[in-house]
Image 1 (cartoon, rainbow, N blue to C red):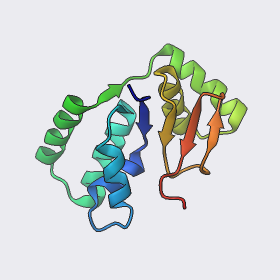
Image 2 (tube, rainbow, N blue to C red; image 1 turned 60 degrees about the vertical axis):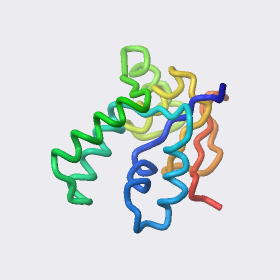
Image 3 (tube, rainbow, N blue to C red; image 1 turned 90 degrees about the horizontal axis):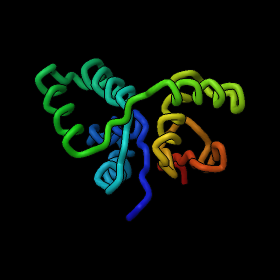
Image 4 (cartoon, rainbow, N blue to C red; image 1 turned 120 degrees about the vertical axis):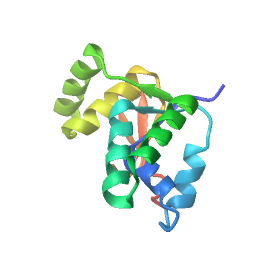
Length: 135
């Protein structure tokens, strides 16, 4: 069994934008096994697809149902929110990013695919942040 990996919002969005040069890479990641995301990421995906890609609410509803059927959608809890606070202090990471990282850590993800950090940034010696679009 492969390790779980967390996919951040922008990677998902590139997977939906077929005219973007990052589409193919993002699509391959999303199609993989053991993909997880958080409710926060799902909300960000929905918001951005409505605002930037012209999705209608009916499209968002279908997307949400499909994502819940296919992927683990993780929720924050007291432990992850407190862990996010420690991550912010230790690594100087922005608020919302720290919550995603804490949720991924709590759920034993080994990799978080994101375009927000330098490739290979390691958090707590447990999760590697990888930018799949960096050479």
